Amino acid sequence: MRETRHPSLCQGWEREGKILLEFPLMLVIPAVDIQGGRAVRLYKGDPTQETVYFEDPLGAALYWQDQGAAYLHLVDLDAATGRGENRAALRRIAAHAQVPFEVGGGVRSLEDAQALLELGADRVVVGTIAVKAPEVLAEMLRTFGPERVAVSLDARGLEVVVSGWVEGTGRDLRELAPELHAMGVQTLIYTDVRRDGTLAGVDDAILRQVRAAWPGFLIAGGGIASDEDLEVLSALGVDGAITGKALYEGKIELSRWVGSDA
Image (cartoon, rainbow, N blue to C red; front, top):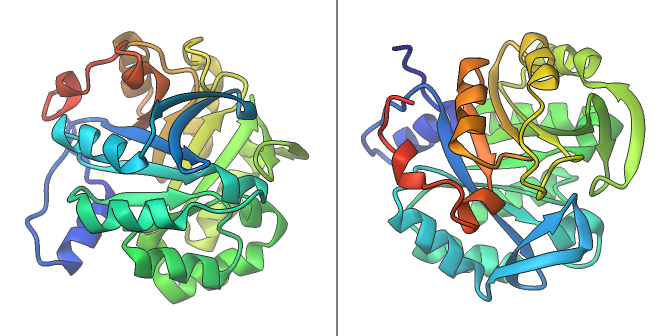
């Protein structure tokens, strides 16, 4: 079995002097999306189509921690769409949860990234600036190191979208991804926004192309509905999977993927 280490997680734990963990073939990462101070899931990224799963996002973080999660993916949906922010909720999670986490949503400046890292995030996730302001991304990589900055390319199939998924860019992920790798980005998160929150299953044909275009650590999300979808991702060589609705709805049992040989 091929062993892989989550680059940011392991280096983050080294900074704290903690024991490194080796993960199985694929790391399954619960998503905690925060809107209006609550843990929600959106349908295809539409903020008007939300399902509330926890009134307090800290409750969601602690729940997945108790289920054995090794890492969490937090998204400030209000910051992503410019409708506010949920820093108070993020601070509570940082103060009370033991599991390391990454944070995305509205991270568009060096100051934004620094504030979230100082708050307690293991790393920040940026999207829009990777397309619109690559010079800012380059500065983040120089300042914080590539292990503390991941890039999320959200796409309708292969066309990258930004600004909370509402703005098409006309950029093909297969062309953009190698440019980001050349800049020094180590970790790419791909989300198929056509499928996110739908439980429609993954698009293996698209994901095969994404895997071929990205030589670094690859995390995928969008449409995951079952253990079979996770097995497809693992077979394609994807290193990690972010899943939300399937976990919240009980379609996937996280315990089956913690410390397994999946």
